Length: 326
Length: 292
Image (cartoon, rainbow over all chains, first blue to last red):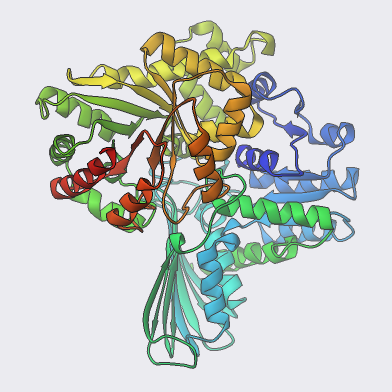
């Protein structure tokens, strides 16, 4: 993710990558040999912020390193802006430590939930908030991938920093929080498929203050998924809405003022997704543009650290609910 | 050109549809689709490597003489998903170690992973060339007699990343290697066409490169805008440009696509995926009218 963000940022007007920090000897050598001499390469992040005049740092390291790394950067420079790749931390407690740490920070701080910049998910949220579906009754949601079809060896498979809830599910959980707010109660079931230390499949049922209930399934060991796929289907008294990474479909039961009855189907192609520079997906570019605008204008991004910490709190609740139920 | 997306389960409109479609396709059927497309005017096959399905397709076309028509091969490397998945599973160090162990670089270079060689002696350009050779070799060894390697494309993951940092040496060395070793045209896939053309114009001297980039009526994946991409296409004079995503991943009709492509004056060709013999016939018969 560091390579992706650095490429985008270096291509956006008004921004320049001044330095990178990498601990792996081999990658340090690759970077020093390949990158332009205008990009300094460090092995220590504190040394980097001490030596370089930089406005912002993108933290795209393993989750376990987020707390010490972020707090260390803040100690060195209380005006620095920080972008952290999702999730913010490995637990709610760690996320709170980070939120406490940035309380007096003068820079912007944002977490990389790029799906908030998906025009499809954005439109789906508008439809839900506009009350087009009527009173919300229930939802079902899923996030599946084929990322883990045997035991892995990286930090993603270590207890405390890995597992499907911390790796694949955060985007879905953030979208559910964005759409519906925080649930009042959570129940869950977790299963291991290939991993020995972490969960590969999680099912969670959530209840809300409004009496709406819903469930989500997440599994990174499903076969046949070239890319991770997200789906949320919402049932209201006046119709249903289905949103994925690729399309948004609404089925309305009856006319309401200004609303079309029947099916409406919008694909990603229905929206203008052109960006100044594209790497991987336009959502990443839009996310980085938003962050850089916040850095320049000294404003707070929508997905600030406290907002992103809600995902960690929800993951903790899902984990806790499963443990209580045995 | 026939594109391989339907054969390897890729759809930028609906991954669920791609999964369904791939269940109905076996290698024999794919070979039949390719033969039909070639008989209706297609002149080449562009495909991602490394991908086992594409290796099997070439083997089948060669072994069973599925088509007697001469056609061009336009491989694209590296197919990024393979490496992203490996990096997730093994970490960046594990991925680098695996890759280095496969490269024909000799023991000295492999010591790099243990940090035994200084950065001064490290040559990533040599690694890039060795990587291209390693990936291409298994595919070229099974290519049918009537197929000719015409262009080797560098995948957009590498092209657009190198473009973002202005890494002239990556482009220069790739061009030189494809020319010298394969006597083929160096190709680049990009989703940042306007910026790419400006960069090449200012930094690289090569007059026979091939660019493959999206062109469609709704501007899908045309960055920074459809208008700027069209303007740069009209002015481009350093080689050929192949349009991809002409159907915006299946969102547009073929008639829509053909009508739009007619308005572009400087295109060398089109790459499009087809999933059945009928689909191939309909698509390439209509696309062929663009050449007239």
